[in-house]
Image (cartoon, rainbow, N blue to C red; front, side, top):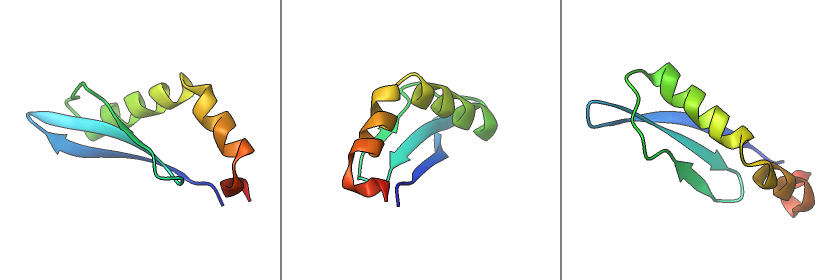
Length: 64
C-alpha cells in the first residue's frame, strides 16, 4: 500500500516541513516556518504542486 507522510522537525528557530513517500523518497523544505502547523501546511502545498509524484505512485508496484 502506498503511503505519504507529512512531518515537521525543528530547524534553527523554526520547523522544516518534510514529505515522505512510501517508495523511499523524502523532500524537505528549504524554508523554515515558525510553527509546526505552518511547516506541515507548506509541505502539503509542495506535494500538491508536484502531481507527477502522486502519478508515479499510481504507476508503481506500491499502489496496491
